[in-house]
Image 1 (cartoon, rainbow over the protein chains, first blue to last red):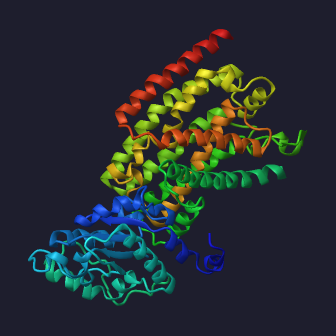
Image 2 (cartoon, rainbow over the protein chains, first blue to last red; image 1 turned 60 degrees about the vertical axis):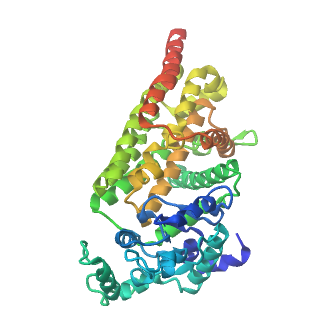
Length: 190
Length: 309
């Protein structure tokens, strides 16, 4: 452990633990997932930084969407995101979740993921190399340090708007709202 | 009396710290065998702090009770297992009746057999309440695996009890330190116990109950936040219990805490190194294996022990 970090650990253990224990839920939508096995196995070894894949959204705190998002997938993404416990961080991986990428004129994929769920950071590229994932992670560390990775707070605050956007493309959603009285919930402390 | 109370507080704490350290060590060892750098050895502590700071989702009272049940079962088992004597530098201290075991006077092996089943049962209770199909499959696998390793385990315990003519673990440890270690007087039982160690610990090749790739980590599928943190601690304490029991029964316990922990470390390193290079087996193959080789060896040693008495 870096000795300079000890004061940070004492000041906000929860925040620091979130930084160094990013348990990732990889949402394998498209070709992007092919870059993840080298990241988590021997060649690049993400476990050095405490990043390991977990099996269910209940256990994770990092949500990675790796590839284009079709309408059907979007439904699953929203459900997975809502199942994860707060605090949670979302990262869009590759060009497709950012602006549609090579599917920019497809009738069946969504172009901007952050209209439907809050995204804390992007890793651009088609495909991003595993090194880019680590650069993304260090950026996420900075954001967590500064308290700017607040996607889950934004989701709670603007839930009505997000839900409206979701229903605009998916029609009537067949699950109840996560925050029924959006805007009137108690303040979240981190 | 006072020393006993201090021990009742202290020995679960030792089990927790050593168990968590061992979990961290196992991740490091597996990483090094994979030729990776691996996480820092205190990574499980970071994970537990992170899980504790997350919002926890509950599925009802039984869901929470299962976690408490499992954790309490593991902690209570620690109280019945001697973790070394009080001899330092060749001088025996009469402190704590000469052995670090809070409840040495009562129970013994018979109680440990029953208490060790509490943890899987508690987990089954909680996971069942979550009504997740993956959790149900995981629970059924876990209980089947328990059935598989309990048969050789009970035979081994029976052999040890009839060899030393006692059910007290402290007595067994003392007799081993006077004469020969259990691994020399009952070699086949020791081999059988070593073969079922991965099944009891739930590590490879017998990690099929919590297989993340097949059934989404099984009974833990619906657990998150602080419930998952408590279950991670439970796993660490359970690891301590199983390996401590092996050291007590076959490697002569320890004259003090340090030698005891060193023996535990040696056993753990061997088990972990073997498990790191093995793939996962199917449940039917696990049951077949446990009922063939360990059971056969344990049965053979029992016959030899009983006939030679």
